[in-house]
Structure formats: structure tokens, C-alpha cells
Image (tube, rainbow, N blue to C red; front, side, top):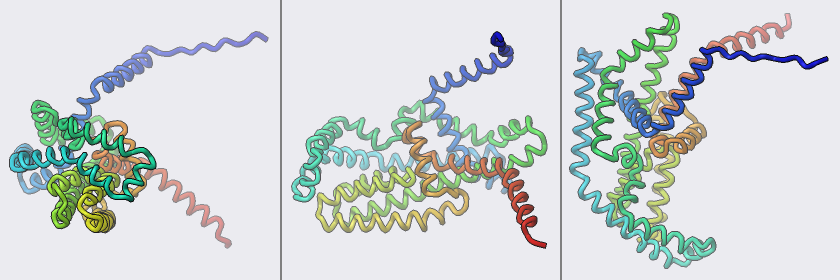
Length: 357
């Protein structure tokens, strides 16, 4: 029996759809930096949206409320940078240039020398610290992370600011336009999900910044109390690293304890105890108070989200991982709600059938 010939026909519409999808993927890859800027701008707008919404409910116009909130934020950030940029930059420069000397001082301790000698880490780390001190602008970019990538120039800052402002002003109009293509029942079901997602993003970002400020304050005061060098720089590094959930606080604690070792072993032990106690307080008291029920993510889910997002988008991805993981969870919870209800009804029916008469 001769083999049968199978003919596969692909329609023109399918080919055009595939070509359009491929073009969008290629465009996204080529303009990844721009997409990251748009993502950050959208996140800022969503983070400020509940504040603007509260003013609108008090009778303010949407445009006026958005301009007031955004202008207040911009003025506060600009004033903070203007007041602290000079002294902090000088301390950052001195701190980076002093890192090789701190490493040599740590090497004078017998137990630390034995620890690094076993893996041959002494020469590698000393060389890396010298390179870090020689390339201070690159070091500052590495420390500041997202500032070097997103706010690298005045033009990008202005563009990002206006993009965030326009998104903040037009968010309800954009939402109404998108839901205008949906059926009434779809609108009624998914519009509350969108509002819950915006609330989760806002709570996560504002809470994350507040927690980072607390962590920086604790680190700075502890460094000053124990006589550590450059307490302002250590506080700044701790605050920036603490923006990265779960992982950043641990890295900051290692840096603080390492600098404390250059002062004395008791200071290092005390700093280690303070950081361990504070991290427990932050994880089990501060986080629940700040986030309440807006971001219900387990520690495992948070770490996985941070690792995946940071591998794709770098430091901005690590910072934005938690709010967007919370959004994904809210969407998946609503999408799976009908099936969960059906499965619960089936289980109840099975239980009723198994009950003897």
C-alpha cells in the first residue's frame, strides 16, 4: 500500500500573524533598553496612582492631582540629591580608595589569613579592590546599579519623568479604552483585578522604599556607634541593597561586618548580632506591617522572582520582581477561580456520595 500524502495548508492570515509576532519579538529585543525605561516609568506611575486616586476622591481633578503628587516627589528627590550629593560622593570616593588598605588590614588577622590562603583568594581580591579603586566611576555605577542604567543621562531622566507623569494622568483613560473592547461581564470581572494589581504595586514599592530607609538608618547609626569608617556611605549602600528583597539585606550585612572587622573583632561581632536581629525584625514584623495583605508572597516565591527578574533585566528587574510577582499572583488567582470553584463543588459532591445513608 503506497504511503498517503498529507498536505498542510497554512492560511495567509496565519502567516501574517506569525510574521507580526516575530517582528514584535525582534523589535522588543532591539529596543530592550527603551522597554526597561517604559517599564520603570509605568511602575512609578502605578506606584503613585493610589495617592492620586485619593486626591481625586476628595474632589481634585485628575491632572491637577497627578501634577501635584509628581511635582512633590520630584522636588523632594531633587532637594535630597542637592543637599547630600557632594558630601556623600566625597565619602564614596574615599571609601572606594580605602578598600585595598582595609583588605590588607583584614589580612593581618591570623584566622582571616588562613581562611583566604586556603583558596588563594588573597591576590585575586586585592587585585580586584585595586581595580575598583582605579575605576571609581565604574565602581559608583556598580554600587548605584539602577541609577547608572536608567538615569544615566539628563535626557533619559527628563524622558522618564514626563513618561511617568503622562501615564499617571491618563491611567483611567487608558484603562477605559482597553476595557472598551471587552464584554460587560469581562469588564465587571477583571477591572477589580486591575485595581487590586495597582494597589499591590503601589504598596510594594512604597513599602520597599520605607523599609530600605529604616535599614539604612539602622546601619548608619550602628556604624557610627561602633566607630566604623564612612558611616554615611555604609548607610547608603545598605539602603540601596535593601531595595533588593531577601538577597540585598544579606549582602549589606556581609559588607558591614567586613568593614567592622577593620576596627575590632568585638565591633564585628556586635554588628553581626545587630544585623541578624534586625533582619528577623524586618522579615517578620516590618514586612507584614508595611505590606499588610497587599503582597502575599512566600519567601521561596520572592527569591525565585528576584533571581529570574535580575537575570533578565539586571538590578531594575530585581527591584521590580516582587511587585510584578504579586500582580501575576493576583491575575492567576482570579483566572483560576472558576476552576477552583468547580473542583470544590465536585469534592463536596463526592463527600456527600460517600456518606452512608
